[in-house]
Length: 157
Image (cartoon, rainbow, N blue to C red; front, top):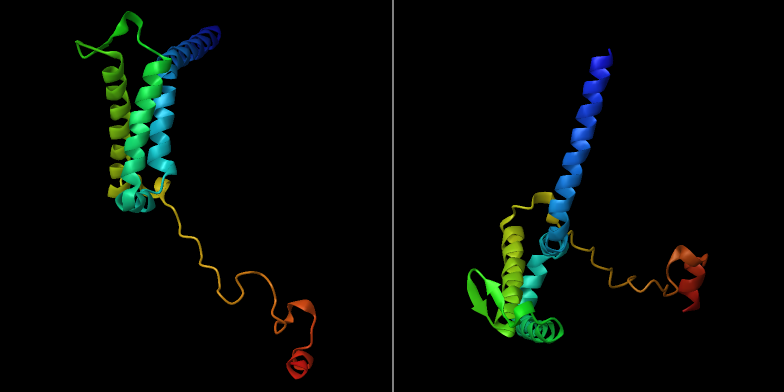
């Protein structure tokens, strides 16, 4: 019985060490995973696509250029250049490639959601349309919600 308990303890210890090692590997990627999860599961791409078509692409383009400019001014790279895929790129060119990659990932998440691969995880039910007559919540004197007698109200008008 002692051998079984010892083996079980070693198994739990090994599982804990594996979990800690995976956590150290995954933690630096957590912001990117959160970014992708947001664009994949929190954005209704059916509606967002219509916004982009109606001129929202201009806003996206401006955000790409402004975020590149601000990021390049706030955090210049060490060594005055970016080393991306073996290329030595200047500060703003490197930052633009990073921002462009994030933008491409955003649109890829949209295409995955629009293709239906997310299944029920990315469904956005339509809100029920408000009734035009009673949508504002105020009575007009002809409903029974306020304790008025319908016949008395009809004769009073």
